[in-house]
Length: 464
Image (cartoon, rainbow, N blue to C red):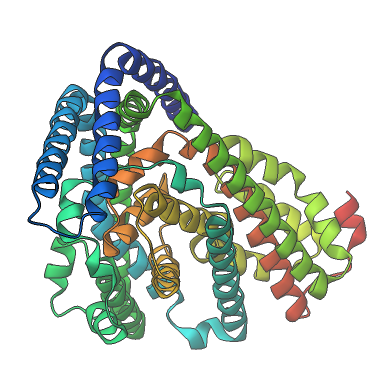
């Protein structure tokens, strides 16, 4: 399978990157790291002594100030030399990130318009559609909030201590401190073309929602638009597939660069991040099963037990889509009516990806923590709402979460370069979130069936 080959190539690139990075670290880069660390410590000691001198015109103060400036120059000089050594490696991940950013805007627009247009006629969707969307939005919000709580509790990114890229230092990350009024005004585009050119993802979402609803409202004439947008979406998905073929090179460059800079000790941070994310998924599973129990009673345990095969399939292939046919069959055997299954389950693959939602919160805040960027509670809540909007409709995209994160973190002036930290371990994380997506969508289908009185007590079918 091409996907499993790509995963193999990514893992191979990850290992090679670690080996090359380690060799570079011990043979070349470490000497500059030691000089940078020594200069940094000396500068900090001088700063402490400077604070004790009240007279800024004193000869001792002037001498210490000159020494401090000299240490800063030493640090910057060695940082420049180190970056020059690692330039060929960082170039690989930079190219990949630019390619990812290239596809974000057209992908969000085309897929979201198609998704909204197909579900936009609320009257046609009726009562079932309303209940389904209410469940999906609630489950998405639950996953995001749970992810936010856990990532703030664990703070996995704090150990990274990454310096901000120059462009971000220049802006000082001040743009995230928008007032509520500024944020609301910023959400609505004055020019769709300008929004596309600047990758203003929220503005694109707003225009896409209007466009999708209007397309659905004009009836048969809108079918031409839907078909055209669907074709465009498939073209962009094809481009995404091409871009992903470059991922192993980006993984190699990113891993080699970070290991060369920080040594093998940084691997402990990755192990910690993976462990904490999977712990978060387990908590999410328990919460979803508990909510399912409140509605379905003991049947929830029978449902989860019957889904073992599609869950394992989704986990092993890192694709919830691969488990779709088997999931649909088992839900019908469980007792859900086929009309409910055929409506809720496909919709869930666009609007109810609980595992992916939690990952996006984890990943976005992990990157912010890695660069030492503090996001206030209000900013984090805003980020959750942005993620909830931007993630809808692009479920079929390979590595969809990375594309969504790329568009979202840019809104908050978090360096997109931080995505390179995650590319190498993304296949491992993708396995867990894909399995979680299957569970979330299955529980949603069973719950909607129960609410609609369409859950049959067909135990013989289930047992077979």
